[in-house]
Length: 531
Image (cartoon, rainbow, N blue to C red; front, side):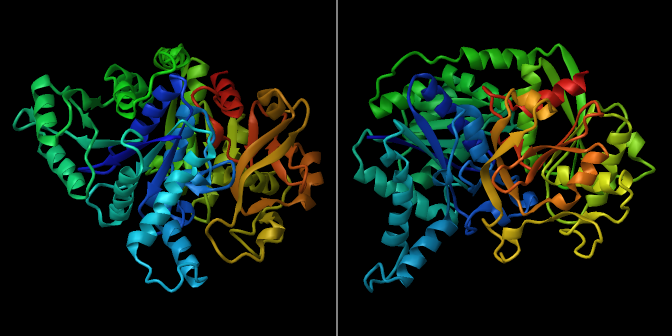
């Protein structure tokens, strides 16, 4: 039977529950256990697919086509194991299921309530992954903070589950903040005490306390935290601010977080943690032999979390190329003919990022034109590829009013159009072309060279596609479709072979880049920028 670890947070959001959960999972995996992580989000959206990136950061897409929280990206990048729709549950999904069941008469006329119906549905979802038999340990991250009204049903469900399961089948890991007050010149434990008390009032006793701090926590302070929070001194774990999130597994190993968890679960370690490959990655990350700067042109650059997977993919590719990749965030709305040369000065390459809608689109098209004409390495993802197609149609094919029907339904040259099976869909959430699809690469193309093979599977999230009516004209003029979906003949990758490195892809390669397996296209792009 699987064991369950619950990661909760207090005091403030953005403390790094996802990173702590991922780091713990990595340590347990390195000891030979089969581990997965799931995220329970307390908002009422069915999923984050309809959320503005400024609200919630990027929407991460799994292999099976689920639109999920960006923390699932951390889970995959640390564990190198794919997640699925079962790994991310929201309050909206829970209530939607319960209300649907009620409408179908599943509760036999009973009054439907938060307890037991909502909490039972939460428990059912918590246990789904454990019942597959694939995993020894399931880590469940509870979003938000203890004490939030939205989180209460999840906390109550965990309390019930802890009571229902055997004593050593569950562990509660609580993450809190130990702030440093500069005026007083000391670390303060009171916020942590209050957070643990709130959790206790909800019926859960903390087993292990992870304390985020910008300064080392001395032993006398650890003893005080242990005494007032009713945990063993060895279960007070220090989590200092790190240079990179990829340091955290090693910091947690030094604090013996994994050992404390295994002791609580009465599990014997299968082996000592093997982190040699992880340490080798960190060695390259921290000791680059060269340095480049890549411009990321996007609409949501004010919030880097909107492009979290792209940022991390560059870190992975840079480390394996022993190169430090500096990213310059460029707001596409601020790109004009008169300032583009200044904006792009000293850049080794440009990535045009994904997005939706008309805002900032002309800046992206202008960026593509500049890098195409000036032979600067270019990488376009999703809308970035579509912008490359629009630019080529306007400035090479002479179709000056060419556009995507997403931005201009009346364009006489619709080089990008809505997919046929999308035209009758009216609902927004979860209805795009989502998840992994097969792509066949043309032999000898940059894509095939990067992957080292001609058949791949990549994840998608889009409604619009390249209009094949224009394909012959594009290829006759130097932009080649080097990747296509064999089932529907959709164009997945466009290249300009005469350019030093000009690749646009309809899929999202950043979603499959991990520490252990950096993505081939990001590797190829970084190499081209280095050259």
